[in-house]
Image 1: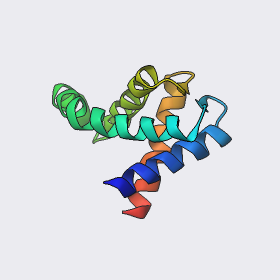
Image 2: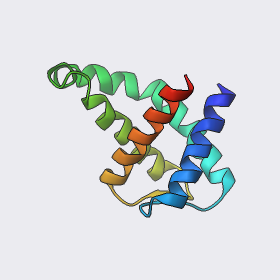
Image 3: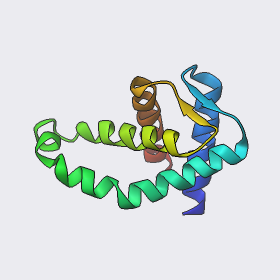
Length: 105
């Protein structure tokens, strides 16, 4: 679990460096955003996934990226110092995070 937080923190920091729509003020903000994202994924994401199950089935699971982007965007509203400029940047960050985590898994 802690390794997952560190990987997510590293992805957030690299995304803030390379993506102009992602802003992180400090290492602690990135780490807090990773922890809050895991908490949001634990409590909010399952409910949202069940509510959008028909759409997810019709898109053969691709709507999961939209759900992940919504979770990242929600975290940007919760954590001060972690700023996402728009939903498209959150979607791009969700795609990058999914690719990195699938490679490391």
